[in-house]
Length: 232
Ligand code: C5P
Image (cartoon, rainbow, N blue to C red; front, side):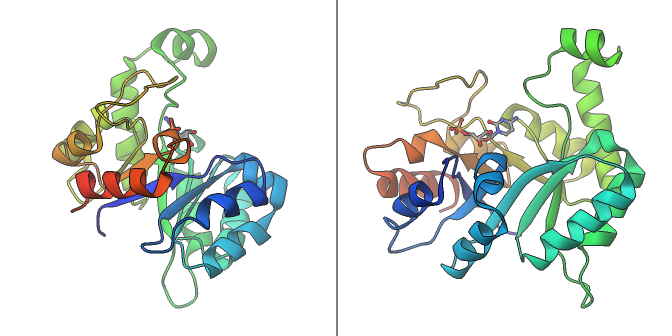
């Protein structure tokens, strides 16, 4: 599975996302569709973007009882997304059920990755609200190892964790990393960031890039800069 730049299409409507994607006449970016757009526009938005030739990471972060996740994943698999995700905290049984639901009759399935601890969760809130008292770094690596044991393909993690995930879970276990900024760019609300070139160096498999591309004066040039730094 090759390295790629995934563009986070965090737009509120179909019109906004198509106005953005219409700019790309050459290489068609791998796009991430999140909850906001999916809930606003429904599964049709996935089909339409797919039809335009883009790969799709559907970022819905499933977390429910195994049977429900299995059936929901079956639907996502039929939508022909290329990558989707769930919360590792749903347990190994839930993750195994997800794989079962995603796997098509011919044995193929979209890439499935796990969210470990959200980057919005810190040590303090994890201890206070979740009653998990281990160091957060150990929790993240444990969740990654459990995801691997369940048969998942990788995890979403910060670029700073990618190297350790590869050490713990092997280099073929995918790391999909947001929090990417150009060296001369605005970091916005992200706290721990890396440039595309640094993310490449530490072994990220996919970078997820939103505003440095979507809010750039020339989004196509910004996307191509990312590809040049990260992939080429
Ligand atoms: O605009 P920006 O590059 O910060 O967008 C990053 C994308 O990655 C957003 O869609 C955000 O929700 C997502 N993300 C993140 N941090 C995580 C998980 C997902 O920034 N830990």
